[in-house]
Image (cartoon, rainbow, N blue to C red; front, side, top):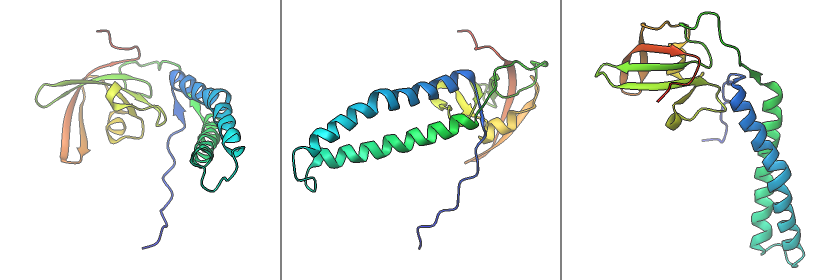
Amino acid sequence: MGRYRPPRPPSSKYITAEGKSRLEEELRYLWKDKRPVVTQAVSEAAAQGDRSENAEYIYGKKQLREIDARVRFLSKRLDDMVVVDRIPKDTQIVFFGAWVALEDEDGNSKQYRIVGPDEFDVSQGLISVDSPLAKALLNKRQGDDIVVQGPRGQIEYYLSQVQYQPFSG
């Protein structure tokens, strides 16, 4: 079996204003704070002599490659992002950036916000606009039933609330 992997489908270029500021802060931290420290450590390790068996040097170079790759990715990605920070005219319909409250068939309630693929974190209730759940929610109205194909079959939800401000409590 070869090492070929098909390219990933392109992800959405939408991001919330909060998400963009987090990515910009990460880029600033990597470039201005972390990279100079690692570069200094690599320079000191290189000055010790034989680099072929110098663990600090080898690890530091690996860290620099990872930092540089992430910096390149963030720089490119941030240039292409579209910040969505306006509230739509009809706030009863689910669009990007909406906070939604869902009830499953057992009456359990869950709350999510639809965000860009670079800022999702399910543990915080942030789901990617590219996820199956978000795709099923987009353009639905408060009070609609949603059917999502999950790994264990279809899951039905009732869309109990849509808003464009965080839920209180």
